[in-house]
Length: 337
Image 1 (tube, rainbow, N blue to C red):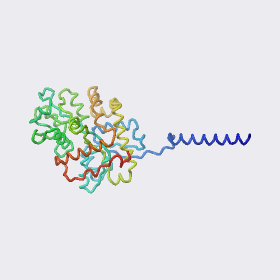
Image 2: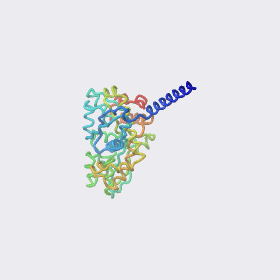
Image 3: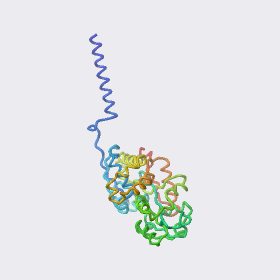
Image 4: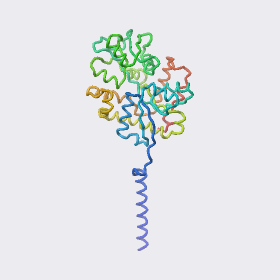
């Protein structure tokens, strides 16, 4: 009888130890969890990706995936210069930056879509122009020809059957300059993206006649245009593949989080105050338009979107026809997603 009780006691202890091990394995206490890996993550000042970065930090989505993102916001041109010169290792830039970096003997890897193209063509509220067809022959204000914004605009218009150089005249400048030109009657329309488009439209002096992102999807089999990508320095990526995967999963969860709860954008008081977006009209527009700009997944459809965008860019000679840009793309299965 004594041996039987002893055996039961031993079995009970073993079961308790086993169950405790399972609990610790699947839900370890904080003191047993490894410290998150610190990663410098560079985004464009004032862009939709800066909004997402704010949400990621506010709700701890980065630490959930085992990384701690140090957000660095700067001018888009400076972002591209740094990573193409090898001065940074992770940034959200145009996919074509990989070609610029190659000229500097720096290898980049495109590891995820980051922001989809979602520019709008804005006209004065009292303009008689109501569609892209009616704008034909008019003047469009857009970013300089060397920018990714101009390239994407030209590609989207070509996909819709328009030639930006033959069907329109073009006035170059930044968004405030081109919007001012429309207001003065020096241009018929200006291309602008969210978040800044929200403030422009909310002011009541402008309205949209075309969503260029929607126009692209309509003409390109429902695919989105990967306007901004998460690019990693090639050497850093090879040495930090697991960290890179975690960063991508963090970015994608940030997109899903905002899509499911767009009202969180109105909670970013510091950001909204910094850019004067702190009115109900502007925040309502941000909540309506920002979520669709942010990727929530990276799979076969997103790979096809990259391939389609690259093919159209080559057809228009935005990039050389023999540019090996596809070789810089890290596909989801190679990333472990």
